[in-house]
Each structure stands twice: as C-alpha cells, then as structure tokens.
Length: 221
Image 1: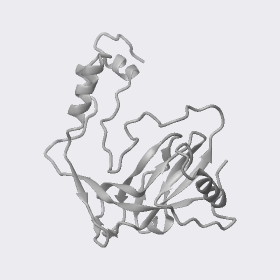
Image 2 (image 1 turned 120 degrees about the vertical axis):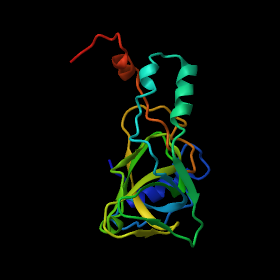
Image 3 (image 1 turned 135 degrees about the vertical axis):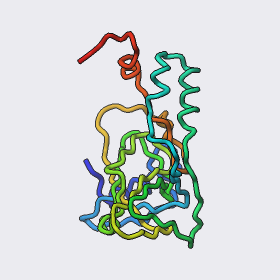
Image 4 (image 1 turned 45 degrees about the vertical axis):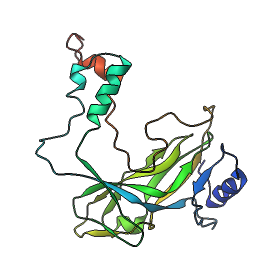
C-alpha cells in the first residue's frame, strides 16, 4: 500500500522522539490534498563528478578475477583499491549554483536526512517539471526498511541545454510503501547507510559470480 501524504504527515507527527519511527529532517512541507501521495525532497550541497581520464573503461572485474576467495581481509583490500577512482567532490553553498551540462553525470544528495522504520520502504522519482528539461534521475531508487542517512541522487542531463541546479531546490519525490511480513528492527547494515555525502562504493562481486569466474570452475552454459 502506498501512503497518502496525509498519512505520511501523521506518521511523522507520531514518531516524535521515537528513534524507531519515520523521521525526515528538516521537516518537509507536505501537500495533504486527497490526491497527493508523496513527499518532495530538496537538493543538498554536495556533488560528486567523475574526472575525464586516460582510462579506456571502468571494470569491476579486473581485480576480482585474481581474488577467488572468501577471506574477509582480502575482500576489504579489494574494496579499498576499487574505491580509489577518479572522483571529485564539491560543496556548493546555498545561493550558489551547480551547472549540469548536456551529457554530464553527477551524484548529489538530498538536503533531508531520513530514518526509515522497519515497516516502511520507499522509492524516489524525479519531479516531472525537471524531467521535461532533460534532467534524469535514476529510475525508482529504492529505500529499504531501516535505512538512515541522506539519499544519493544519480543525476544526468540528457537534454540539449545546460541545467542550473541550486541547493535547496525541490528536486525529487519520495513515495512511501507499507511492508508486509516480518522485517528486522533497527538500522539496516549497508554501505549506503549513514552517509551525508554522495557515495561511490565499489561494485559488489557476489560469491556466485566469483565462483563462476574461477579458472577451475568448469562451468559453462
């Protein structure tokens, strides 16, 4: 079930100081009209872009091919190495602007800090007024029960004109869903939780893929 804006407002008010409730800080202005079912979130001040390099391509697999092991220390070493990429983080204060040029991609964050209860999940979509000028937001970014932190936004300009972005602008919509069935109370254990800046983690190489990449796996479709 998708929560109406009125029900979202009620959940926020009921949470109060209860750390296990729904929290959005700073408190959003919610449209409680009967046909409304989302919360507008605003653009934060941190942006992360990727520098143009001489590297021919990005690969999540080159190091993983050498690492066919479940050893935790080795996995942490791979994570540290994979995270060392050509990223540039920039703080844009309120009143200043960030210009996203045609064909450019950047990571941003929401101004709001969220804490999701264990009985709710959410997804984020772009506001249509921005999308019609070519601003593309990652389709239906999922927010799991137990998430806490600022949301990372993946923004692309697929239009023909540069787009001026001001921190504090209402940039996206958050839709909240109730979760059926048991979930684990408390914070979600994830590398995406607790961040206030855009996050660029290494692409996870799961155990099954690692096994299939092993030279002696002997498996072929």
